[in-house]
Image 1: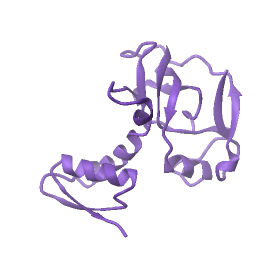
Image 2 (image 1 turned 180 degrees about the vertical axis):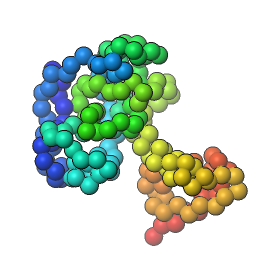
Image 3 (image 1 turned 45 degrees about the vertical axis):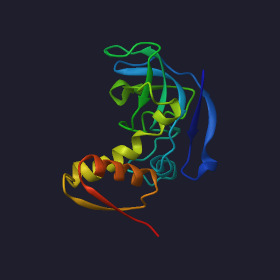
Image 4 (image 1 turned 30 degrees about the horizontal axis):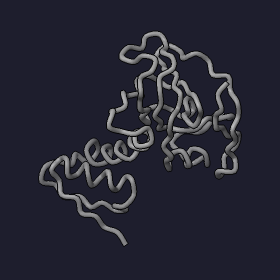
Length: 178
């Protein structure tokens, strides 16, 4: 059994409940993890409240980012073994997966080996901010060497990531705040 966070209706934090769940063995292409830490994101709050890119299928699990230890490896998965410390990146649908749990199955293609210099907590909270900023600045806007970019909310997690990413590609970040 694994304790998991679920919700049966849209709403605020009051709709969340902790339940025991029988976790199946990981399917082909999945890893089963013992969760050590989770990241908390606006995306999950939006999903829980019904204001996200996809709709929940009730009862719904929750959670995009985590770090943990591999406990089981599904068929067809290579590069990971039981005992590996990993990071889960937000690269899956929360209608199917969720990492607010003691244990969870996740797609192996949304998992990276955790860098040894990162704590479980840092590894769990790292990816959403940087993927959000990278997607907007580099993938969509093609930010590069010599460009200037205005970054609003520069003290937020995404704002801090955006400043670092702009610097890393040779752009000049201009942070504005009130």
